[in-house]
Length: 87
Image 1 (cartoon, helix red, strand yellow):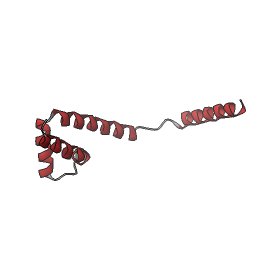
Image 2 (cartoon, helix red, strand yellow; image 1 turned 135 degrees about the vertical axis):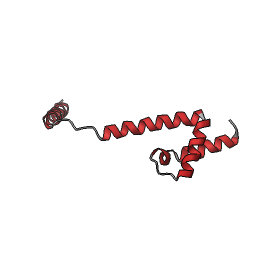
Image 3 (cartoon, rainbow, N blue to C red; image 1 turned 90 degrees about the vertical axis):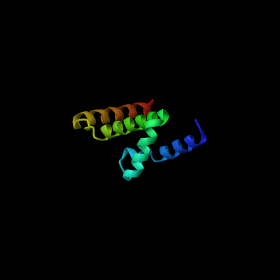
Image 4 (cartoon, helix red, strand yellow; image 1 turned 45 degrees about the vertical axis):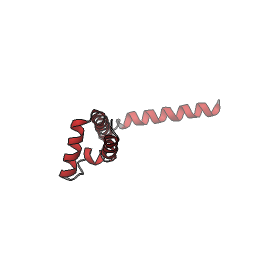
């Protein structure tokens, strides 16, 4: 890897989330796509970060546990805390 390529990779990585969130101008997005077409290291980084963002989004949109289950878990936690305190 050349020093110029390392600089390009660093510059591209610094704008990773702008690219993934589609917050770039068309020109900047085209430059990133061109770099990704030639750089396997950056493609790996972008694929990983893209998958991570999808995971976070899925978790954020996941439904909460039903109220009765949440209540039961909370009560169990309180019970265990009381037992630990008295031991």
